Amino acid sequence: MSASVPRFARPRPVPHRAGTRLVAAFTALCLASPAAVAAMAGSGAGGDAASISSSGSLAQAMPFVGTQSPGVGAPRRLAPQTPAATAPAATAPAAKGGASGGAATAAGDAHTILPQPPAGKAAIGMSARFGANLPQIPRGLVWRVFDDRPEASGAYPLVAEAAEPAPVFFLSPGGYVVHVSYGLASIARRIVVGEDSRREQITIPAGGIKLQSDVGDKLIPASKVSYDIFEGSFLQGRAASRPFYRGASPGDLVVLPAGDYYVVSTYGEGNAVLQADIAVQPGKVTDATLHHRAAEITLQLVAQAGGAPLSGTQWSVLTPGGDSIKDSSAPTPAFVLAEGEYTALVRYDGKTFTKTFNVESGSDSRVDVLVGEQAAAPEGAADGGSGD
Image (cartoon, rainbow, N blue to C red):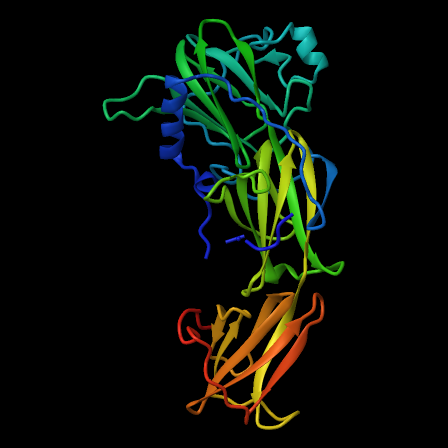
């Protein structure tokens, strides 16, 4: 496991903010190529940089970040959805791809009996699972139904919308695209509605991850660490260049499409950055603790040992090769640094003073630079860095 690389100044990712326009674009893609999306599963690699374990089923784990709910409260539907008051209930036939109504019921199908639809419509009972032999998803789903015929503008009309685990849509005969999202995982399926009511069950191979970080078995405060999540594997050289999800906080449950990811844990604002590969499995929550080897170092310029810090200072922290890690104009800046050797360079009253120091993992400390040891600034030290 590698320790040094980048949760994120930080806008949320596009998947987190999928709006109607993005869904419509995805719908168009689905219509052009309606092939099923295959579930991915793999084995994670933690090594010494991370401890990874499973905390059980995702079905009962709520709430999670990255939801795409259309609103709070009762689901909003944009098409007539009220069944005829005097019509008898209709027995739901087997779901598309299912063996029989009895088999689906035994597997926990949400619709054994469908309400009778209004005249000229069919009742389509929707539900979703993590996989063919995995639990039904009981909450957190967002459903959108689009007409598969575009309007003159090229947009695909939104016909119905719901935010419940097993909605029933009353649809006129014709073609539709059903889009369902769960966290940051989503699937679109094209269906053709006839005169008969039926069930439709969709597989969403989604899993969840919860992250935290520590130094020497001591958890890092949530306010000091964040995570960026990338698709692929850093260790195997299949790493995406842009994050799939930015800025997760410790303890957040992030729901993602099942597959391989790598997580970048950033501790503080220095160079304490750690990476770990993690596999997300359908229907499961993966807990990962990333083990940083770093410490928080406070710098101050003093006239004598034990003296009060002087103000009006400009600080830089440099590597042994002279590269700047962080700059600051605070009188007593604090940096989180990965263990190793560094040089503190401070400019004060037209003079430059330096001091070399070592950082030991877990040993937060203060470094005093004494006035009196003037030194020429290392080459390139005047450039780079960002002030506090």
